[in-house]
Amino acid sequence: MPMFSDHIFRSYDIRGIYGIDITEETMQAIGNAFAQHSKAVVVARDSRLSGSSLLDSFVKGASDVSDVINIGNVPSSAALQFSAFNNIPLAYITASHLPREWNGVKFFHENGQGFLDTENMKIKEIVLSRKFVHKKCHVKVMNSQTVINDYVNIFASGMQSLAGTKILIDCGNGVAGLAVRAAFNAAGFNTDVIFEEPDGNFPNRKPDPITDPLETLVSKMHEYDVGFAYDGDCDRVVFTSKDGKISSEQASFVMLSEIVKMHDGPIVANIECSSLMKHIAKKLDRELHYSKVGYTFVMEAVKKHNAIFGVEVSGHYFTPHLAKYSDVIATSMYLCYVLQKTGKSLSNIINELPHYYTEKKNYECADNKKSSVISELQTEFSGKYDINTLDGIRIDFDNGAVLLRASNTEPKIRLSIESKNQKHLEELKDEFLEIIERKITA
Image 1 (spheres, rainbow, N blue to C red):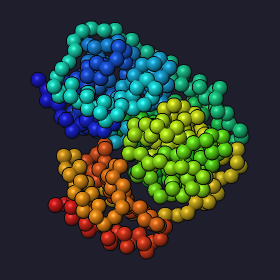
Image 2: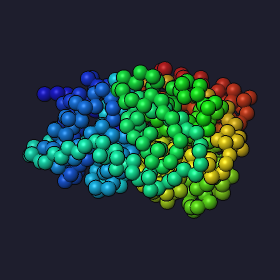
Image 3: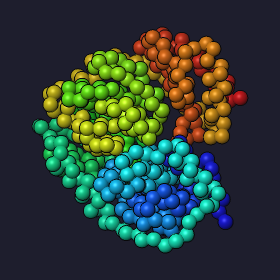
Image 4: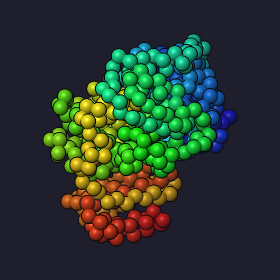
């Protein structure tokens, strides 16, 4: 009888190394546990090498409990649209931006809202206690291309290109390659695409466009007005200008500068975002609310505050006027639309914003140790600083901020220090690095 690792159950998804933490037996058990929440479920996957067999195992476990619609290998946004249209919850087999040896699964309600940590923990309890249900239900296998075509067709009657902005898209050999060219073409945009063929080996760059330098995309940008790079399951995007990568906060400003003209409401940013978001909110005369890090938490905060926009520094964007779930293909098109409407270049728009000097470090820290380290540092800092403990530890200063938090997806603790002033940045580093490194390595 297989053993199940409890550390694969994260705050908003399930992830682990394929063949070690995540196996076909594990995924069958998870499928059974997930399906106990609904009379029917939708199941899909990205293009990872282990995805096909893990999806089959998930379907096997889920179909012991409820009816299953298997839509196969499709981008996450296409799967979310199918789920929402049919009013059926979704399980999406993916490890998102993590390296090729990883895999896992994300859960979504039929409205596109990801499962909260408490809901994921209920699935964990069922798996670890082995309280499985065994009866035979119906499995319907959909043609994946039909699902993708239905998704692409929404762009033919929705957002339309105004003029000839030149766009370069880097799919990174992820699942975006199955739909992105057709979607942009349907909306009338002029696009070229690189690394389009899905390949679970990710031969041309990392599946995470945030940490990868995107050398090929950036080297070609002199020929284009804007570039996009998607992650493995196409739920994150990085934007590039002729000058190279731009930050999620800078991209947010481009879109928000137009959104605020049409919609009333606040802005949501996760706690990991730069202080630049506070500057943007003030500049646009909108209230800013912070959320915990993670797709689920940002979307929950957008809904709670009736926000017009939500962003994560990791490249997740929420634009409720475009879709009720995160759709980075639609978001990418909207940024192009704004550029065309304003007639400004991407670089000219973001040059209106101040520059922050930043320092980021990732510390290896075992999953079973991360929370205790953060808790100890909270105690140490609470008497000296005004700290925000929404998710980790954030300390805001007049010219910058320090953020320390445990990763939800990896055995790491992440440190970010920023300031408008290089001298102040060095002072913050001197003040915090030694304390943090001593605590982590203890």
